[in-house]
Amino acid sequence: MKIAVKANVALAPLTTFEIGGAARHFCAITEEGQIPPALEFAERQQLPVFVLGGGSNVLVSDAGFPGLVLAIRIVGRQRSGSEVEVGAGENWDGFVAWCVQQDLAGLECLSGIPGSTGGTPIQNVGAYGQEVAETITAVRAWDRQAREFVELGRGDCRFAYRFSRFNGSDGGRYVVSSVRFALRPGGAPAVRYPDLQKRLGAAQPSLAQVRDTVLAVRRGKGMVIEAGGAPWGSAGSYFKNPVLTAEQYEALAHVADLPRGGHLPLFAGPDGQTKTSAAWLIEKAGFAKGFRPLVNGQPGPAGLSPQHTLALVNYGGARAADVFALQEEIQAAVEAKFGIRLQPEPIFVGPPPCG
Image (cartoon, rainbow, N blue to C red; front, side, top):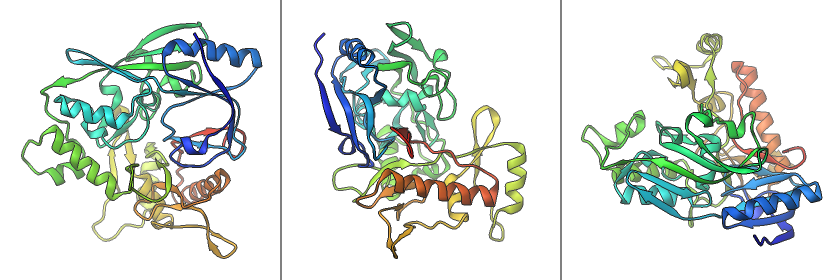
């Protein structure tokens, strides 16, 4: 199948952070049959490969990427009863909006998350009490090791909190071409998150009401990337909410600076474990909303969002090195105060300080 490989393509405009250098080689994939020949090109040239989706969860090195970037732009939706198969290049929030319109429950709390559908199983995307692992039944992908297309069922994907086989031991092995979801026609929305429950009240809300509420909450935190939205680049939530060991839980209770009658921000994690809020830890470690390290006596180009401490943002002209330096400063301060090492969510692309 015919493919078009371009040279020296700027990657910053293809990411929501708007940061990074160029790809040495670049190939847009609009149908899955283009994946094998594109990878064969990379093998002949002995090039590393990076698969780019919506560009919403990546930080590209200032030096760019020295290999082949595959931009997955496979679109389309096919519904069969309660199941929907979606092209990996479909806009995720557009798909969620379509599900709500079709009265298909199961993804409504994942509204407003940027990026493409093919990226959701990789990170096991989740928010406000839902994860895609709950509804994914199969992931279709090119297996670079077996050199064939395969379908991996939910159990095969090894989902955990913000984790799957695709970003674990098999990272880089699979190129996702489509994802199949089992949804609930006419089903009730899942309102498990306390903030949503409080906003929606006691009455049973519709899927549309839940979606609208989630979008309002995310906009209030500057987490919705849309035309006319926040005037800065961002990858959304930059750090994962930590899953605490028993020892960390006990230590946190002793060192946390709580007001009288205050409580630690704790909520249920995977396998009966406990999670805490990364944003809360960042704030308690001394970083306020809108924090920007000084550069030559002036606020630097990278900083925290003025709306939410969990978002690192590009205020204009930031380099990957600026973001990475801020990340390390925050990690060091949180670890020094609480003994917890925050883990970043974005994928680092290219040579150090990001790759």
